[in-house]
Each structure stands twice: as structure tokens, then as C-alpha cells.
Image (cartoon, rainbow, N blue to C red):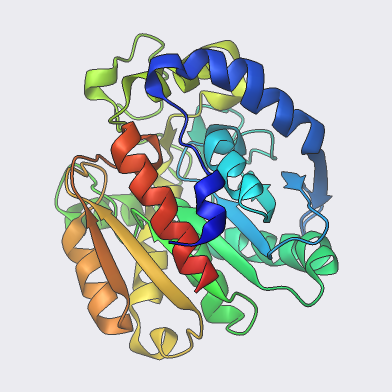
Length: 324
């Protein structure tokens, strides 16, 4: 165990609201630069930076679908306390970034290459100038892992190490993937690109912990209160153009020629009770790319919102991986 891990104390669920509100959030507010960059088409993309002098390196956080940097406050806190500069991007259509959709409950995008391009702009203009000669790592969850992989395939010598947590190689469409893909293609071709996926683009302010993707009630309730208070955090589902783009991204990620381009050491965390993803695709990618997989017991899709014991193990495993 590395010495600096002794300084990382996982926030107890028993006093979670108090510690997050009175200690963690004020600390992060003091360290945070909250700003925007312009995408290649001139849209404003929101980001957060928690830079640290004499840092161990830099960690770029990439959130999951319908999320934002806001949801990763606790993870940001652990990384910053471990001595890293931390950077977090709100992907297009999420959080405080530009939304292509006129309805912020729905995410529209024509291709995931847009996400990868905006990540490249973020790293080139914001992260690299501060990182200088220090390593740059990625911590990604779900959709964020898809974006990370597309970026690393296009820019194979920038990222030293990448954590892919519940990586969205292929999402659970609620129907056979082939059927979902065919429906999405037909609707997009017929002018229905912005039609919301059935039952997805509705924010449920009465959502309960039991049907969530978290395994910590305290962590779920803390963030759910934030979602209820801020409409920009209530994004809830995809349009059919997003569904089509996600399957096209899957095909790019699974292409052997693209996998050969990867030059980043990666580590996958796969929860045993994930209802959002098709795990067989994660296993297939890991085998093809020769990536080590750590299976996580007692966890749903959002491993970073697990109970204290699992979360402590998870954070320590990540920090050990970056430091090796």
C-alpha cells in the first residue's frame, strides 16, 4: 500500500450529508476553476479544473450518460487529496455544456466523434499546458469510457493510464441490439432523429434508491437532491440519433484495426449487478484489447456510488494503478 493512501479516508455514509456539505464541497469550491471552452463549431463546453502545484500528475474525469462533473464531487475530492490535479468535462448535451437538443431532458448527437473532438480540445488547451511533463491519466465512467476509447484511438500517445469504470461498450437497449439499431437507423433516415427513445427522456423526481444504479443510499440521495434542485442535471434519456451514434461508436471501438492503435495502459472495473450495459461486450473488448478486468461484487452500474467498504477498495485500487 502506498503511503499517500493512508491520507485517503472514504466519507462515511453515516454522516455523508454533513461531511459533503460542510467539508468536501467548501474545499472543492476553493480549489475549483469553473469555466468554458469553445468547441470546433463554436459551442460552449463547460469544464472544471482543480489544479495543484507540484502534483503527481493530472486526472481527467469523464462522466456517464445523462450525468455531469457535478456528480463526481466525491471522486474529485479523493483524487485531489491524493496529490493530483483534477479536470472534469461536461460532455456536450450534459450539465452546463451546450445542448444540441431544445429539450435538456434529451441528449441529441449525430456522432460520438464530436465528444472525442471536444475532449481533445479540452486536453490540448486546458490540461496539457498545466500538466507540462507530468503524466495525464483518465478516469471514466460508462459513456465517458466510450469517449475515452475513441479519443485514445485517435491520439494514442497522450494518456498514460486510463480507468474504464463500467465502460459503455454496448448499452442495454431494453430490446435486442440489432432491432434497436435498425429502428434507430430507419427513424433517423425518415427524419426522426430527435424523437426521444420511449420512456427514457422523463425526469423522475420521485425516483427511489431501490431502482437506482447506486448501492449507497446516502450517496444516491445526496446527488438526487441536487438533480431535483437544478434542471440542467435532470437530463434523462437519448434521442434516436444518439442511439444510432452509440452503436456506431461501439463498432469503431470493437474494430481490430482501431484496437491496435491503443497505446494506453487500461484497467476495467465491471460491476456484477449492472443493468445498464451488456456485459458480454465489455468482456469481448477486454479480451481483444488485453485489458485487465476487476469484477466488483456488491455493486450496480455506478461503482463510485457504492457502500463505504466497496468504495474504499475501489478508490485504493484506482490510485494504486495510477501510481504504479
